Amino acid sequence: MLIRRPPEPPAREITDEQLFWNRRRFLGALGQGVGTLALAAATPGIAACATDEKLVQGDDKLTPWEDVTGYNNFYEFGTGKGDPKANAGSLRTRPWTVAVEGEVAKPATYAIDDLVRPFPAVERIYRHRCVEGWSMVVPWMGFPLGDLVRRLEPTSKAKFVEFTTLHDPVQMPGQRSGVLDWPYVEALRLDEAMHPLTLVVTGVYGRPLPNQNGAPLRIVIPWKYGFKGGKSIVRIRFTERQPATTWNVAAPDEYGFYANVNPEVDHPRWSQARERRVGELFRRKTLPFNGYAAEVASLYAGMDLRVHY
Image (cartoon, rainbow, N blue to C red; front, side):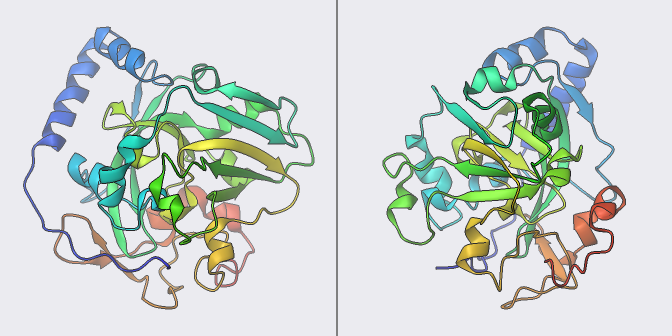
């Protein structure tokens, strides 16, 4: 079973977005005060939060909390958009360890708190584009993946970094199906991983990351289709050769390794030229690199992005 177009969700009025902005103004007034410290205590890796709004442009508006946390692709908990929220309560995110392997100077199995605590968190509001044709604007909490990569010290042979999701059919009932070859694996070229827009994410909307969104640790790459971001990560492996990734293996004619948002390269079963922002009625034009071309297009200079899709 491959990814299919989702049904249009109903638009609705909610208040979470306003509450979020009120919280931001409050924390801004406090600086690095009590409110931030309380959040840090609840969420390892969210320590001294700095906001970064320069990537929010034009008519971008935050997607409501209910949609960010209730309309998800996370096949480990089911293929329906509401399945992750309904089924992810079985996931236990503490204790949690992440194995670091391969071409790296500091291989080890790290407790998650030890892995993320050294890095001050930032708040990044990113557009997201799903290969199915829908999009969101999400306020993530986390830190640049490049900071972690530098601390782990990849060797001169490392050209790629691979991320593996937990494989536990007891906790993740979707893995009892054969819809994909488990565990879920994704990977980036090392320079993509080091780009400052690529985030290790531990929270959203100023709260700890919910299970259905990839708790306790996920990767977000805002210029790529959403399936590139590994969730509930238990292994990070540095490699010399390009790793095999789950969707690229399952359907190589539909899901390329790079998966950069490119409105000129259609999915074989639908156009990628336009997208539907969740909560909106009408579709909008899809932007090259999801609107981040000025920041990331240089990573692909000289590449044919119709071939390396």
